[in-house]
Image (tube, rainbow, N blue to C red; front, side, top):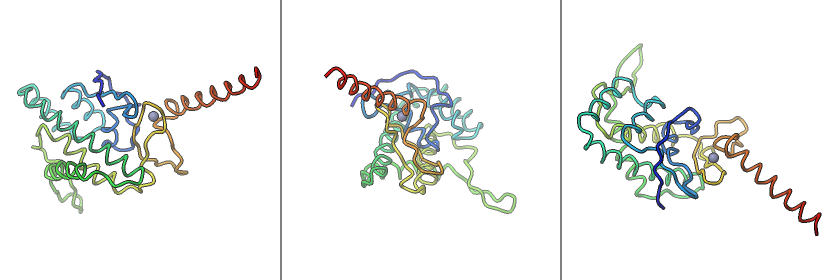
Length: 214
Ligand SMILES: [Zn+2]
């Protein structure tokens, strides 16, 4: 399937996954029909990471500086991040549909997760041990590494029946349903939910019209 790359201004409405790792998967929408990829450059990936607060300010600054200094080296890291993104989608959609994820997806996730773990340090502060992102972590693969880290540490421990794929057409966004009732079906009711409602209404009124003119 070919992805159309679009330049996109990220906003709060794009972060509905319940975790940055899921929001990263959702930087492609419409995987079920005509996929659009909203990460058109490494700079955009950084902008995304800033908005979801994936990493501290100081690491972001170091990465931005590095990107301006060696732009050619950032490109392969962007490709790797996008490969991880597809593996994460395969993983989440398999889990959400009660299937075994592809082994290759787990292997890719593990590789980036280990890098993400390595980007952390353990500090003793206020009587407890805290895992924090190292101040000197500024590898181009850091964003992918931290996404993988979050996926393993925060998303995978969630109850599997709360991992969902939006039921809307041309969407396929993934999210954690943290609602009390556990019946969330849409990425956003105002986006996919209403479209589905309108489609049902349209189908119903068409049936009624057909019946009336029979
Ligand atoms: Zn949706």
